[in-house]
Length: 465
Image 1 (cartoon, rainbow, N blue to C red):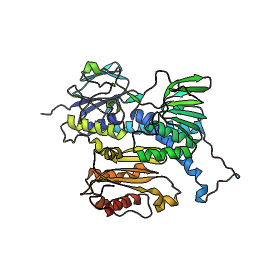
Image 2 (tube, one colour):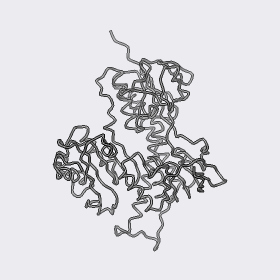
Image 3 (cartoon, rainbow, N blue to C red):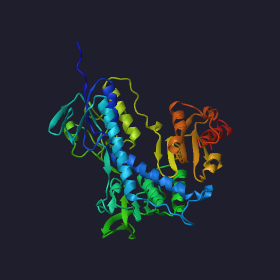
Image 4 (cartoon, rainbow, N blue to C red):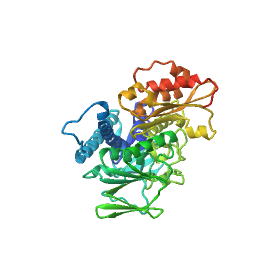
C-alpha cells in the first residue's frame, strides 16, 4: 500500500520559504509555494542582493580613490574624475536581482514544486487562499518577511523621502543624502553613497554608529566615515522629515534642522504578519507583531511553522534559510538539531566589512563569558600593506585553559570571507592551537587569523587579556 505524499504549503518565497520548499521536495513531499513578488523574496528583489550590488560598486570607487598611493595614475589630466552613471547603476542592480530571482524559481520548479504567484492568506491552520483557490496542506510554513519601518512624522514618498527599497528607482544619485538611523542598514548605505559621491549626513541616536556591534569595530568604522568626509551626528534623534519642493527638511528632537536633497529612513523593520490570517490559524504574535517560534520553527498552532524575518529571529538570510530547512526536517520526521544562534556568522557590508561570530566583546566585558581576547591589527599584515589597506583587525575570543575558540570579529575587506575559519572553529569545537598550526598562505589577509591564534597561545593557557 502506497502512503499519500505529505502536502506542504509555504506562504512566502524568500530564503526561509524557498529553502524549505527544496528540502520538502527532496524528501518526497507535495509542495506548493504561494508568493506574490517573486522567489527570493525581498532579500533578493529589494534588500540584500540589490544593496550588496550597490556596495560592490561603491567599494570599487574607494579602491580607485587610493590608486595614487599604489603608484597608479588615471589618465585625462591632472585631476581625473570617475563619475557615476546612476541610471546604469540602478538598472544593473535591478537586472541582477531579477535574474537571481529567476534562477531560484527555475531551481525550485525543477524540483517539482508548484508555484502560485499571488497574494496569499491563511484561512485556517492548514489552508491558504490564493488567486481564488484554496491550498490544503498537512503542514504550513509562514515566511512572509518584514518591511521597512517608518516614523509617524516621516512618511516616504518614493522620491525624496525614501526607504531602502525605493532607492533603485531614483533618476539620479542623491546630491545631499541624510541617513536617519546608524544601525547596520544605515551604516551600509551611508558608506556606499559617500563613496559614490553623495554628501552624506548620518544621524545616529547613540554615542557612535553601529551601537549593537563590537565597539572596537564600530569606532573604527565611524573614524573611516569621518575621514572620508561624512558628517556623523551622534546622540541626535530625528523627530520629523518633511519634503520642501526638491529638498527635505529633517527636524531633530533637540530642535536643530538639517536640509538635504534626499532622506533615507533606516529605523528598523516591521513584520509582514498583518492581514495574512494569523488569528484564523491560531498563531501567537509577540508584542511587536512577530510570530513566536521555538528552536525548530514551530508556532503555537500545531502543524504550522514560521521562518525568516516575520519571526524576528536574527534578520539574516542565512538564519531564515536554516529556520526553513529545520522546519521541514522536523515536520517530515527527519533527525534535526535545533537552531544554534550562537553559531551564526554575520557581516556588515561597510568598507571595510565587519564580520562576527560567537561570543561578543560586550559579553566578555559584562562578565557573562570568561575569555582570552587578542586583537591583531591588519596594519602589520604584508598583504594589507601591498593593497594599501589601512584599517582593520582580527579579534579572537578563546576559553582559558582549553583554548577553545568562543568567538571572533574581523574588520577587513572581504571580512565576510575571512570569518569562515572562525565559524568552522566554533562549529567543530576547535582550539586556537589547531588554528595556529594550520598553514595559511603567505602573503594573505587570512594569515592574520592564524597570527592572532598564535598570539593567544603566546600568553599562556590561563591568561585573560
